[in-house]
Image 1 (cartoon, rainbow, N blue to C red):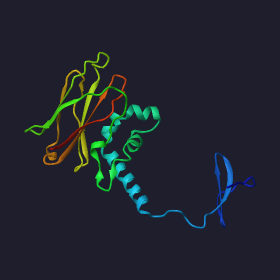
Image 2 (cartoon, one colour):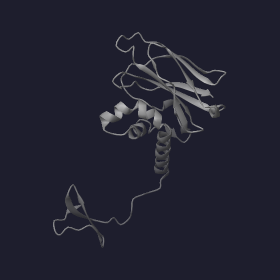
Image 3 (cartoon, helix red, strand yellow):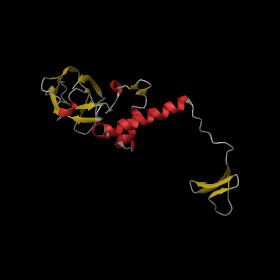
Image 4 (spheres, one colour):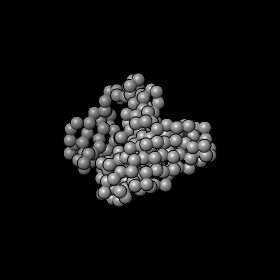
Length: 202
């Protein structure tokens, strides 16, 4: 790549390409062949990226809430942070939903005691109410995702001291598999790591 300091030009001329970078004009030779091999590994990577991008769109309501703090401090949007955190969650077997992260941070999480879908189709989750004096007002967020319908909903968040939460899911989710995720959020908007609660039949 050589600097071009003559008259400003842009575009192609023969096998030369004129352009600029950081305000400086330059000229380079066009490669004889375009390097874009369709190897199996590259195609697999592209497919994985596309699948995680689609999942990010489907779970937008989740990562908008759970990754806001992270995105703000990285000066990115939550879609970009979600894709970065979950880029390795796709394989030839599909998406590994048990390792999907919808939140990221250092806020102290909780332990899940039980989780079930009751006879009325309501998701019930009980967690250990933490005695942390500086975090008793942290909120517990529960997100229920239905991959078949590519839709998800949050339960009404509850404070750490409550110890249980319920989520009403749409009737059309009945009979579909549901993935449950949770995280804590403090008064400043900081979050815990994602807690994967499990997979259930809706």
